[in-house]
Image 1 (cartoon, rainbow, N blue to C red):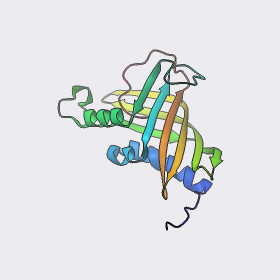
Image 2: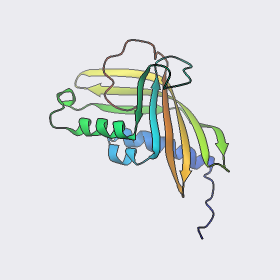
Image 3: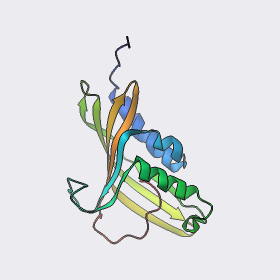
Image 4: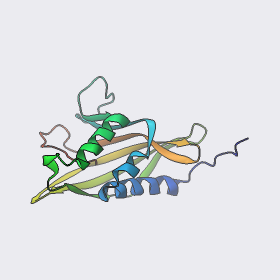
Length: 164
């Protein structure tokens, strides 16, 4: 018989959000992918207030398989758009736990951020909010959904190379 799983504290949920951003800043993409649940999604809506990624266009809506392909592309020797490689930095406001369902093991955190992506002499600043829907799998937290809402999501963008 398995021992009962203790619900995460708010501090553990907030640490998860900070640790996830740190993994991206340090380009530890394989460890970052392990944070996702098997049904995990990374979603960047195209329009403010968008409620359904399947019925509307999005800047990104990727499942774990597509995220793995993007990570492999970033590491590829023939990925000329990554020579020199892109780098990033997340500046996070204090995350907030906006919902918690201890019985169902589902938690939601929302974080305002500034994100800088740089490659060579070019540097691009993005601002917005990330929403992490976290699920408890055994004793581990996993991302079921990371939603990134940019302030200017409906603007024309160049290539966004990395993950916000």
